[in-house]
Length: 203
Image (cartoon, rainbow, N blue to C red; front, side, top):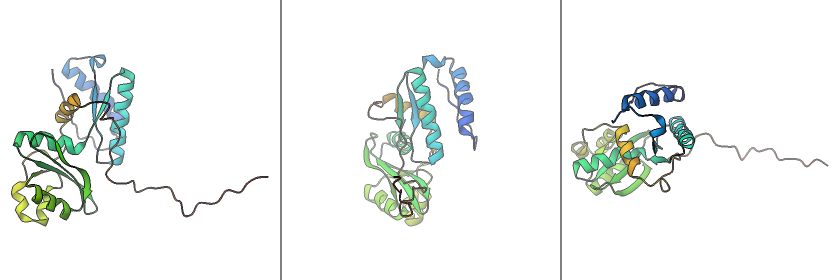
């Protein structure tokens, strides 16, 4: 039996995850020990959210001795949409700071342009070049650049659906798709290098 849960819990994901997993197992009428692989979205997205999800999935996989498979958030949006539409699709997420994260996949789900951080202008140009449909939270930013792209926007959920993540994870090779965070932007907080105090040798 299939079961899913996607509650809007705001903060405190780490504290809520175990109980959510337990409720899904109960609904699916299976025991945790019957799970033979675990899929988890690996980004791009919130730094904290990705770390929490990946850490939980890897810990659970280690305890159960099963593989943990990383599924890109952009792929989880674009691949199902492209297969359903029978057309190339760009999944585009609002990355803030006048940037978007975008990927283009073909009608069969194959990646045409790998996920990257782009300006809305560059993403709009790519959408026009490839003639793809558009989906995701950043779609309106592309339409604001070129109004003709408004007709390219698909009426589908703008975030990865857990069912699609699970279906992709079921087919992916664990060795080639590890559960490791995929950030398309470097972290804001970085170690200082220019103001390091030199160490003095102690004689």
